[in-house]
Image (tube, rainbow, N blue to C red; front, side):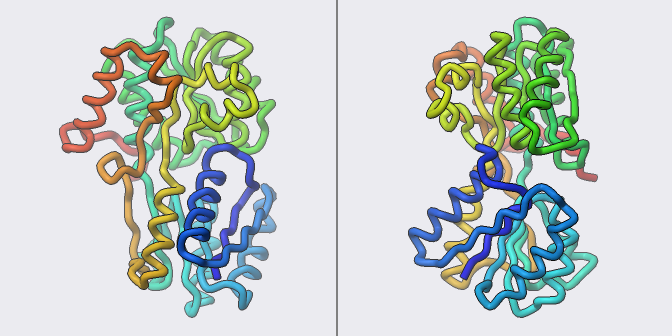
Length: 311
């Protein structure tokens, strides 16, 4: 019995929805029972809800995601040593505690963001690009340093505007902040801001500028409800949460998932990359596609080392 604990809500069309997708596929293919808890955005309630979920006899494995859940999960995992836990997009501190029952899945979002930066740096006509982060956190700054490095590798004089919304679930604020960046001259804004970031696409649409999505192939999701908005999303920096959780649950069912350690998935492991959908194919000149493919190969082969905010 698997419990997926979402510290937020479904419907972000990126991070949590990707996790839900992967777990649903695993449920269908591996015959496991999954219960999903949407804990909401009031973080003061998460600890109690997580404890209740872990203590339940309807929970053998509890899955949760993001650095915001790390400390709460550490406490619960130590208390419930008979249960198994998976945390995605973060890791418990194995040096500090005995977490033999926790498997952590990390992503090198800096590598994916580097590719987004290379792409934006080559595609910008104004010479100014932006990034809207959901929070001024180490994970989001890992996006920022990769994006800046990638953009400057192809266009040293590029101006990169960086803003933090400090909330993950305010699309109206995201739209207002992105509009400000477009007004400042940015013609491409990369969003890494959850539901807040959905407002960036609206701002791109109304201003005739472009956006880069995050975590899922957001253009393909948004085209179902707003095709003209999807056309403004050139690509998305995919964090393949869905595939990683599907894989983890498959290994768990086989009794082969490695608890007590973290795995890190980057470009080389297929954990991150750019969405190359029909919008990308249509909007992107051939020489830009070649340059992006080359940068991806250079990261995979270790010829490029992408800077990180994690020290």
